[in-house]
View 1 (tube, rainbow, N blue to C red):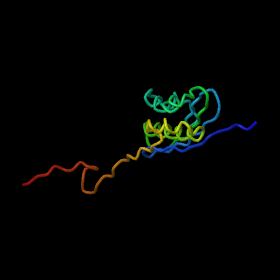
View 2 (cartoon, rainbow, N blue to C red):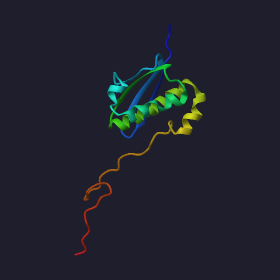
View 3 (spheres, rainbow, N blue to C red):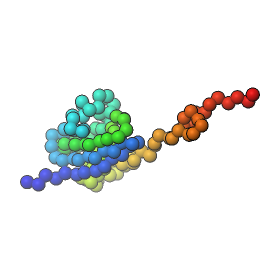
View 4 (tube, helix red, strand yellow):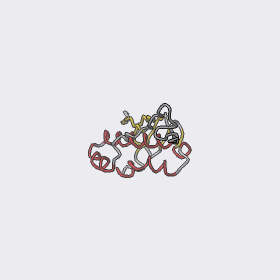
Length: 130
């Protein structure tokens, strides 16, 4: 028996997630841990489940994700992006719905670099005329 699986890569900030979707009971595993123990905040788990619920495939597929880089919020966004791309590979009819919600768009916002001679990316030292 050949098990069908769909792979995709998701990115957000400096996080990169490799996502694999295969038929199953709806388990979500992130870095070999259940999603509930890897992501402590409910909002992050909600972000990950958004494309699954929108596609209407809750409880039908197992999702395995390997994610690295960045913080937890960036990783959750990368997993959401990867799941969305994998769902489109699985069923191209979902593309329009996922695109409308913005799940297929890679969020381009990155951290701006600190400038030399200054306190930060935008912050400056106090200006004194005299």
